[in-house]
Image (cartoon, rainbow, N blue to C red; front, side, top):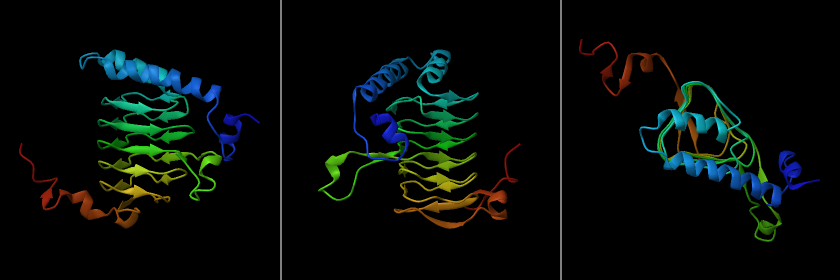
Length: 200
């Protein structure tokens, strides 16, 4: 069994020539993406389609971007990522439609055994899934195997170690559900600021 095959089946795996080649290819494309001038929006959009496995319409990623492999990532229509999105995408990352990433968000599909005796035995990778309309605040970290349900909000600075259901506000380290998204959120956009009290 190759190291890639082990990784895809959830076994411990290690870097080999195949994986290093995948990473080298992705890093070259990401370097091009990050070095383009701000006005090269069309070129940047085309490069995203080369970097990732699939990219929807109207996807916008603010450089700099970091990605490991690229081809295992799919991104839905209308997704926006602020600067310093880091994808440890040794295995699948599925990002839904209209997802918002604050600055400095990290999605990591890969980890290492906890016990020091086994830490050098290899690493493991499990898929991450981010549902439609999720908003991840600044400095959020999502760990291997996590699914975040549609419409949910993950507060800034959270470390998401377990699945988060749909339609909730969650935050903390480790991240926990605080409350459901409710009618109050439909009336107020920030503290006492109402949607229906806007200038003409």
